[in-house]
Length: 309
Image (cartoon, rainbow, N blue to C red; front, side, top):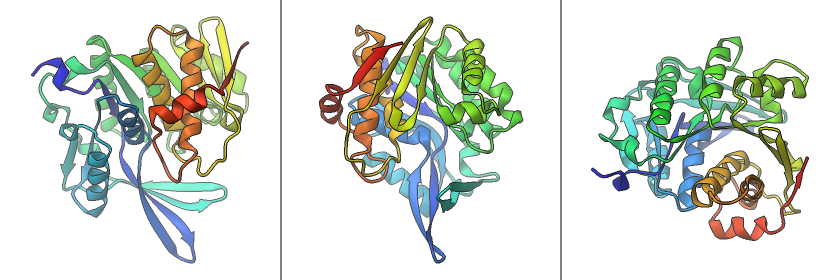
């Protein structure tokens, strides 16, 4: 097959089911997983995309597969197997508290050899991240794929998306992926968790020390986000909007940044940051993880303020 027959963007990581407390012993399930959601964002923005991973063959896996197909993702990259589902049990909302159930679950049995032959030829950008990189043996499999994609000419984006399972055992993977990535996206909370410190500046310096050539994106919630490129730095703030739900805003943010770098490569770095901020804000206009359209992002981008620092 020719490169044109494969997706230009591939997200590698986990797809899972969130089981969220509703109080009084009630629970609601939601399809999720940050890398999977980023793939949905990219597809909504018009980039031929895929999520490469494995899900179960039960009702949870069926829901993820249906949502993957509905998002327009390349279904050749989603694998199904008879192992148990990966679940995130969100047992407290304020503050957020959760744990994962997934010993020997379907995601851990993802098999790169079962992907379409020659698929790497079409990939221009790939995102790797999430808790999958803290779940052996899947973690090593994905890191190796990232290295192979880099060698094949793809641009690598790394979003660790810190979770409590990423303790000191995650440090070698953090360094491995940071050294490999062209762009690293972290939140202010990610920095503190990944480096187990209360000194955000020191954590950022350590991250930059892993790969001085990488572009670094730091999101700061409602305060906006910063982009660091070498000695240059920009900060952008979102315009005032009516927030319906912030779930998926970070995934839309990195999706917007990748989309801008892929389709508008000639623009200055601060313009990619502007588009990313607008994508994150647009995702907050609807309930749940609502990937924005290019039209929604464009309308908001015109109101995003960007300043050099």
